[in-house]
Length: 294
Image (cartoon, rainbow, N blue to C red):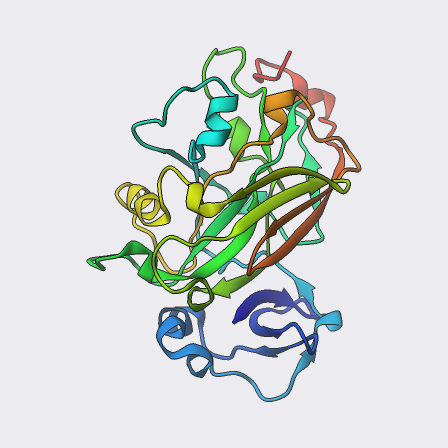
């Protein structure tokens, strides 16, 4: 089952159950906090769907994120990526960071080229969507609603002047976290446990990334535990699960304004976005030690 957050012509935002074949959707009437924890066990019956269908052409897709939810990301999770950057073995644990809601971009939306970078990069990622708090659940992934597609756009030259990682600049910039187009529910991945799906990313039609999620260093259950040990995960939260090799950092081919980026994950769909023009700061905002690439 595919669930999306959309907006109608009046600007109202709500969740819908998608029927891809019929190109329509039915509105979910119940609050997210009520239907999300129950949908994995009870399926469509937990949704309390409104009668009648809405044509997808009349709706605008939003990032599939419940308002107020948090967005987390993790790194260093595919050895193929790390070895191309010079690492010879897997790290002892992952690293994590938080993205602000202003970073989110829907499918079809424009990614902002930030003013503070000259090396804008891409990362296709499987994104876990939390349905209920983990608490004492034996298997963390059993608490998921399902998965969506993410593109963790990154400013690779962030922190160069410090000689260390600057995750705030690299990972938390406005309009640099495309997510969507919808959530595919957990049952379509075989339920709880490690999903095994292909992921790929193309730029202007050229394939740059291609791998399978069963090659993660840290499986989804471990990633969820890592985040939850620091900040308790709540219904609606998103967790980006890391990216594989083929990124621009490896060969110096970074994103440029006008590029069309397509991130695709098996059983979910295609997240398509365009890189917008580079943001120009007002002269007054360029004063001071801003930590730019220069």
